Length: 191
Image (cartoon, rainbow, N blue to C red):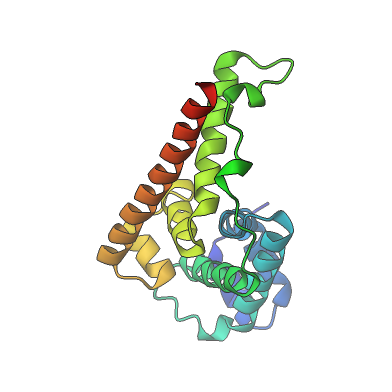
């Protein structure tokens, strides 16, 4: 696809060519969906949040002042929509008992022990991510998965840069505590 840049297509949309917005959607749909998925922890809900976010962006395009990049503005809409969605829904909370206590639970017929341990660690991090609140999940996702700087996260969330750093630190600490509880449970299980 020949992509000319967000500003070109945004100008096209603002001048009446609504079809040009499809180029914007194509360019940003995966990242918008992934951010929504990490916050919502549910594929269908993430799809709904991402679609709603693009619709909100389209309807509010005239209010976009272009002081930040379109991506930053869109991610702010996705972030806020996903958090609002979760707060309204009050997603099911996982308990520590829901997490497998042994890496062997992850071993398939063609999986090496090293691969199983890697899968276990990844699942453990994802489990801890689901246990923290939606705002913390969003911040962790933006920082680690979307690889945004604290400045960019501040623009997306509307939280000051120093508060972003504090909240990221606290979220990492909570995740570490959750992982340590699961690991302790694993040790007790094997005794």
